[in-house]
Image (cartoon, rainbow, N blue to C red; front, side, top):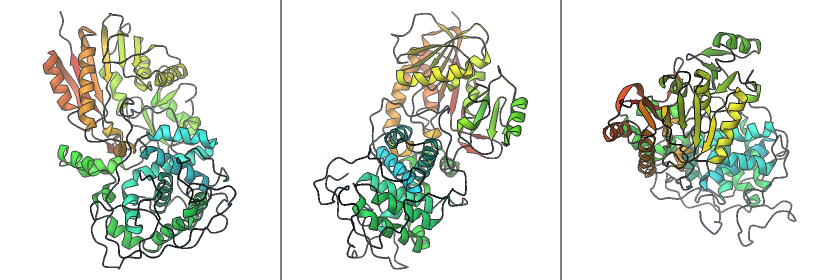
Length: 547
């Protein structure tokens, strides 16, 4: 980010045949021009034509290890050389007494500023999503960024759902919108929240192929301009927002043709990520990248201690919800909803857990009375499944005491009990010296296999993270192995696609410790189909020889 706010200028319309490939190192977005905000920008937004809000809370999803340094997403080179820029149009100012003038000395961006907008308007949701994207650029994971926005905006549940939906859409299409902005503007928009607003609006105007736009185009432009006008950091740029979005609508076909020549726009991943997937899976790399850009399904795990799958399917049918069984205790909803609307969720009848993640507890071969450790347990989905499967003495361990609150909450909702303990799995200070019969080691990793659930991961991660996290995971596995009793079993799980964190890690661990490898699924590739639909996970099961 630059310290000085750039003068924003639009690139002039490119000649029809002149849209060329990207020019390495060229910077992008921003610039006024065009008409100001149309009337009614603070009005109530019409309802989307397709389901919007992703379910909030209750997921069993692995995040990248929270101990890593925060990093922002990389900026992409913008394609298409620009002709001489057109003269910028004057940026109008509104509510002079309330908004900071653009010529003032720049101070820290006001990410926490609450806009004077109707809470049920699309403008309010767009600005909230823009704030979330700006925080991700500063290195904050998207769920945490959204939580901060919800608090700053005092957002009601409906507004939270709209903000979250737009933020996730924009994050999945960030590469594409970044390249498009590079084609239409001469400099990167500043501050980051202005860039986030443009990314969010473009994600609504340019939905993935085969999906309907959630709002009418004129509504998106109108409300985006209204959102810009309502924030003191970039109210001066509302004309630029209007001009950029209207130009995209006028020249959509030409702009997309030029943008999609860049791999960043075509796949919506950093180049190093594309290269890594292609190198590891030369036959499946396209399908893997495409799966990571799809919205994941909402899959439930039925609590066998409370009900059965058939009975619960009838409960869903009575509530007017379509669903199908996709695993021994797994049910996938036809349409994702907020967990508050899932029948029986609050009473512990079901939990939200990916179908692939539901393989862990059965692989442990549990029996009543066993002493079991769930290392790196937060948010507690697998701990709950273990206790639903057998009456065991379970310790749920995680390095982050704050995330253990989620473990406690999930177990209380299910009516189950465990010893919940804070501690680092690579250390032994928390251990009482008694060995375990079974250990589940769901180790920290780059989380490259769950990118469809956490699209920010691809922009926050760096190639060097793979080696760093693999080194940490090796220490964890070696430390836990000595805590396993003879004849015990350790299940190594990771939600990574990179062999260095999965198969290579498992093979090296077996050699170092003389562990006997048992049958397990190995690498599951992310799959989004009518039959199977699961995240990209890796399983390796080890047996410790008797004394």
